[in-house]
Length: 312
Image (cartoon, rainbow, N blue to C red; front, side, top):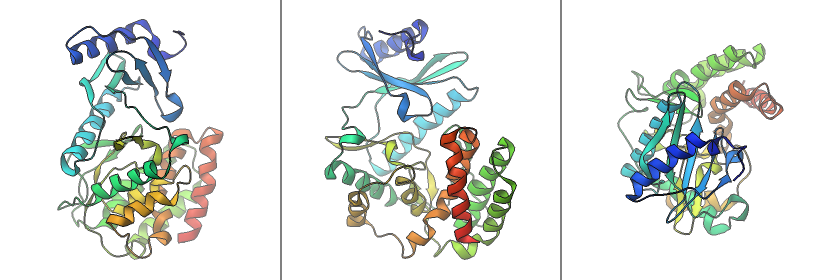
């Protein structure tokens, strides 16, 4: 095994082997690594072993353990409320030492995104529809703090319990503040976001019911297997189903099979296409905050500018 990958550090391998041994009830040894860092914002990969392999994600930020704990809790909630498939945690799902955290689950026998056919793409649409059939009394998710990628996500309900207010107060304005503080957001675009936030009640369409969301439903946050789609990297809360649908093809286009399968079960509200970029504004701001200093992140400044122009 090469020693270049962070997950192959001797102490980290020992922590993973210890957790997998506890999970199995017999000794488990890592036999090699399949790097998966290209699909995530953390160092991650699959450590091969028998009779199962372990998917491991490594976090070194101060809030990494809290972030991974919120991710595990969110996946449990989605599985319990919507009976959707989520990864099986290895032992308690968390390992590591001071200064680093590990999120561990049984590796999945996936059909990779490059090899997905209509069946696999449709399974993503059906999984989203399963979530969106679950409703709750309020937008948000109580007092629990969540994360959108590495950024904090405030899930507290708002007094009015209106979607436009929740989206403004808990998603758009907090992400705007983070983007401004990062120094990557042009001031004119910050002003544009503020104007849109003030006009949200007239832009949001019909008031939706609070619906269970994946919360970060871009296509790579679904692992496609022979048994269907498995949800990963969730940031759940009760919100507008269009917020999930808007993120499915946020990074790359997806075949029509995804939305066709979704429409087999549920019909998006009329006018969704015109509102799609509205629900992407917070995600654009998140990418700019985290990666606005990189070429890959700076391209989202242009996408954000186009979206603002469409609503102002």
